[in-house]
Image (cartoon, rainbow, N blue to C red):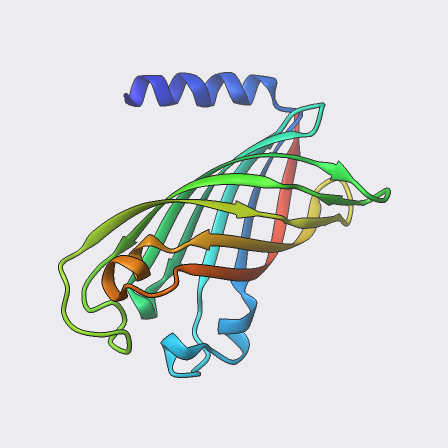
Length: 172
């Protein structure tokens, strides 16, 4: 399996016009927190490696970590850039995702649980503004059906997140 994934990554990199690395924070949780954090500001970081080809097709691998809630996720995104202005693009992206939960799920969410993993499908709609050939900023909006929340509480699993991101691009 590792050999297949490496071959796919190597092939995609050869087809890429540029690659990028990005880091960002969940805007709401950084500023004012949420119900899950008892409205206390908390760091929820997101990190992405992506590749874009000459036709605007994009593949990405994303990792999000929210230590306070014992939450992390890995996503593989497939999207297409739609340019709406000279330096501004929308990138609708489909993201199969694995959500990992561990420890006590952040203390404020409940009781001791065994670590668990949950598979789900997410969708994001980043709005990217290219500052120059090397840097961009992005408002990354994400919708994900949170199977971990549904499994534990049996409640509505629809969740939206908004991240502010800084992107470093390498043109090939």
